[in-house]
Image (cartoon, rainbow, N blue to C red; front, side, top):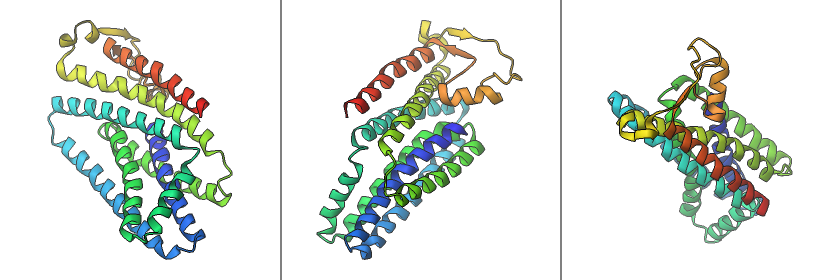
Length: 273
């Protein structure tokens, strides 16, 4: 549930911050009457995201076991790609997020384009909703209850955090906050990348991968041990570090290669900015 919570918290927080900036700006510039168009975009995007998530979940249930493995593998790798792009986008835009959003809203509002404001809010929220659906799909198909719980808790706490931020006038260092959460998300994405490769190896058969499909390590930890990847302690390591008691070389290499590239890259971007 920890990984699901972290993803939901981060994504909903980004959408909430953007919407809050827009609403605050419209109120500050005596355009509060246009707020209803922002809410129209927010509600439409939220409903669309929920429908998309439920559709993916229902389609997965209709697939055969082998195809489910393929689905999970592809979904995990797509989620990693989108998650990575989101992390680096926030790294480059985080400091200027407020000014950038207000500049765009001013351009739309001066034309009094109601459709433009609704579309801006829809895109801002649906983008985060789409990313959340993609990120949580691999978790949803394997841990439906935990994913639902993490999603609900993430939404509630992100809304509370965003409210607190704006109550104190955005004096909190959002950029520093996003930096540390980005590191956690990269660790999570690394494990997800390795998991995606594991599912693809299972779908095609380890023999077709040659050396890469062979076992890299096997810890021989019993399933009733708390250190098993489904145990109390192991399940936490699974989310944060992509831990598993047994892995093939393809999984290990992709996992470590992703971390070796992503961790120093995001640190460099934040330091440079």
